[in-house]
Image (cartoon, rainbow, N blue to C red; front, side, top):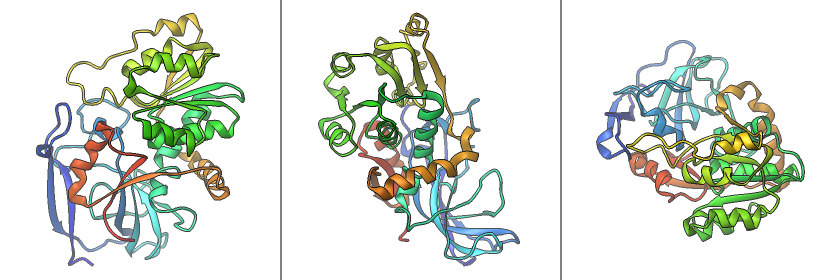
Amino acid sequence: MSTQTNQQVRLASRPVGLPTSDNWQLVEEPLAPLEEGQVRVKVLYLSLDPAMRGWMNEGKSYIRPVAIGETMRAGAVGRVVESRSGRFAVGEHVSGAFGVQRFWTGAADDQGNPLVKIDPALASLPAWLNVLGMPGMTAYFGLLEVGQPKAGETVVVSAAAGAVGMTVGQVAKHLGCRVVGIAGGADKCRFVVEQLGFDACIDYKEGQVAQGLKQHCPNGVDVYFDNVGGEILDTVLTRINMKARIVICGAISQYNNTAPVRGPANYLSLLVNRARMEGMVVFDFAPRYPEAVARLAQWLREGSFKSREHVVEGLENFPAALLMLFEGKNFGKLVLKIADA
């Protein structure tokens, strides 16, 4: 195996606005022999997430930025192809932060990048990057721990057809809430209602978000799970109820701004309604991931939960595939297939 080569996509420069091909470098180098305690993983599927754009920026955040010349950070699933550790056997499937590359080599017991065994019989490998992966964990804990929905309340979620949004809405329905999504395009809105079971979905591309909220949330909004920020966040703030909870998960509308990030202009609604706006980062809940996986996997087995992935093939297509997130071109969780299982 050590005579094989590895291909990596490395960050060549920090983008201004949308990333371009100049921000990336495709590098090929030999695989070094394994050291004691290490494993080698063949990367099969990569998770493409809006948060990756933030990791490319220099500056303080909840996680250190990707360094210039470093392999781009990415969550992934793969198969162990070499092992000098008693914890993982060749042939086992694992998930971890393997990065945008064909092979990951590292310590089996690295607490900074823990490897987790996954079961392909429980769900497809791409689903382990969606409902049973980081987006699912984000949705589950963000909604339950920060949003704290109660049966009968109205939950609104933006980017409802995306990886996090689709799980937020389905979990809220399982809890007995009225769920209204916001998504871009008639096809996505139809999918959210007809396939995921949301009560309604507002097409923001039609430019009628305020009217849609008035129509579909006649009793106001109790929980808003925000993935987009900007104008949509401002609009929802005008409809919140007393003691509403706003979960700040992401702000994809702002990630590629070249001007300062736009904050909420209607934040005084929080004061008037004694509402709470709180940010969440999924890593804070890492010790509890198995709890969420068990519950979500049960719903998947029962057929009362859906996981939809949009798969693009080829490591070399990573730069173009990443842009799909910011152009609204993906339908479901965006996943990059690197190799056959």
